[in-house]
Image: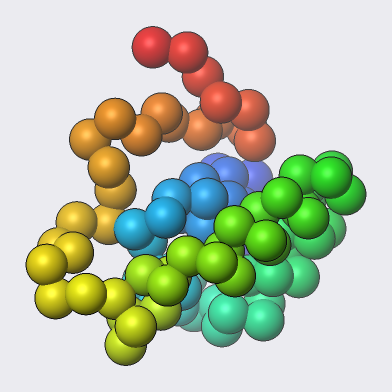
Length: 89
């Protein structure tokens, strides 16, 4: 069972373009379809649709599809997300 802190971290990782689903599976043992279900359950419907469209379009969300020059999971300018809300710097 995931606690709220784990759920928040999974949501944060799922929103990050450079974090592949394989990294979430490695850290939290959740397959891509389980991450999708978690996002559907935890996000507002409009936010889920926006995330799903974005995740579907981003080719680096899967390790096999990403370019070899992509080495980082997270952009240095990425904001941190806490309790499903984006915090300001």
